[in-house]
Length: 217
Ligand SMILES: C[S@@+](CC[C@H](N)C(=O)[O-])C[C@H]1O[C@@H](n2cnc3c(N)ncnc32)[C@H](O)[C@@H]1O
Ligand SMILES: Nc1nc2[nH]cc(C(=O)O)c2c(=O)[nH]1
Ligand code: SF4
Ligand SMILES: [Mg+2]
Image (cartoon, rainbow, N blue to C red):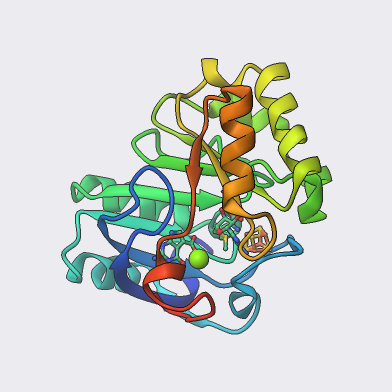
C-alpha cells in the first residue's frame, strides 16, 4: 500500500532554523523527491535516492529522538501519500508537528493539528507559476506563509500579494526570508521598515551555526 511506506532522505534532530519555531530543538523527517526546481534550492541532494522505509519505522525513529517538535520537510513531503497518516500519528503522540511545503501540492488533506509552513514562490524562484492559490483557503492562524526573496522584484511581488490576497486576515505569521547569498538581509529590513510591512524577517539560523552548505543540520 502506498500509505505504508515512505522514501526518506534523512531523519535527524537539530535546532529549528526557520519559521516562528526557530531556535527550538526539532526532529526533521526529510523525504526524497520534489516536483519543483527553485533556482536557489539548498536541498537538491534530496531530489533523488533515499531509502524506502515502513511508515511505522519512520514514526518510531522520529519519536525516539524525544523532541516535542517534529518537522516534515524535503524535497516535497506532500508528494508522498503516507505523509498524511504519519503526521496524524505524530499529533496523536502529542508531538507539535510542522510541515514545510512548497505550496504546489494540495494542503487540504493535512491534519488540522499540523502547523503548515507554506511557501508562496516569488518570480526569482522560477516556480511562481506553480503556486496553488486555492491552498490559501486552507490556511488558518496556526499556519505560516513564507516568501523566499532574491531581490527588489520579489519583494514588490510579496508586498502586492500580501495586500491583494489579504494575507494578514488569514494568519499573523507572514515570513520574509532572503534566498541565502542573494538579497542582503539589511536591504530587506530597510524595505520592510520603510513600508511598515507586517512580516517577520527570517534568516536561516542553521546556516550561521554551521556553514551555509553543511548538510544534515
Ligand atoms: C528545502 S524546502 C523543502 C520543503 C518544500 N519543498 C518547500 O519548498 O517548502 C524548505 C524551505 O527551505 C527554503 N529554502 C530553500 N533553499 C533556500 C535558500 N537558498 N535560502 C533560503 N531558504 C531556502 C524553501 O523556500 C522552504 O521554505
Ligand atoms: N536546522 C534546520 N532547520 C530547518 N527548518 C526548515 C528546514 C528545511 O530544510 O525545511 C531546516 C533545515 O534544513 N535545518
Ligand atoms: S519546492 Fe522546496 S525542495 Fe523543491 S526545489 Fe523548491 S525549495 Fe527545493
Ligand atoms: Mg533546509
